[in-house]
Amino acid sequence: MIFSSLQRSLDELGISKNRLAVESKIRPNTIYDIVDNQITLIKMVTLETILDTLNSIAIEKGINKKLNILPNKLVVYKILILFGE
Image (cartoon, rainbow, N blue to C red):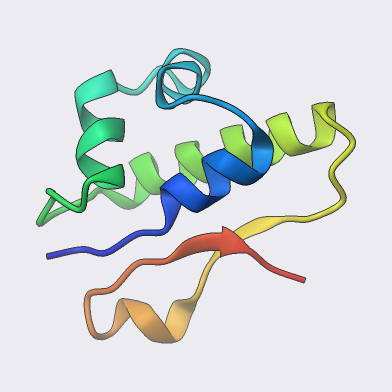
């Protein structure tokens, strides 16, 4: 199981799962599954696309934070998407 905090990031940006899916060109079901912690595998390219899209939206909204992956969590198969410093 892969755990994410994507919903928290969506809430902080004030956007919906659907908007993220449309702007990132990732299937809505994939976004929903990530938010609901229903995935067991995620391609790094998918994760990078999600992060790039969220960071672009943050810049567009004037939010001065960058989303990233906590690398030490990847080893134990937990991926956390959250606002870093």
